Length: 121
Image (cartoon, rainbow, N blue to C red; front, side, top):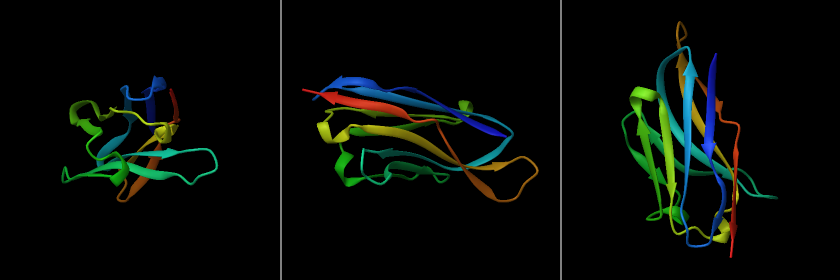
């Protein structure tokens, strides 16, 4: 009913920048929250940044000041601008939306397909 498609990602040099994007389509009534998560090999998936329906943005401490999360409500899209990349930022990045589908009441969680971000020296 709802599809999230990510783009961007790839290989970036340490200290460089990369931008991820995510767009949702389908039977969307409302979006309660949008977020970016990442999962590095051997580690649990962790929150990178989240925007709530009240437009409050929260970042993981490790990315504050370097990553910027923005949203385009008209396109149901979000992006994550990642600057001053570090080796420890390498992971698979996922977008996540909490969506209320048309003719339903409660929000459900949807995930993008994931995009690999690799950082080289």
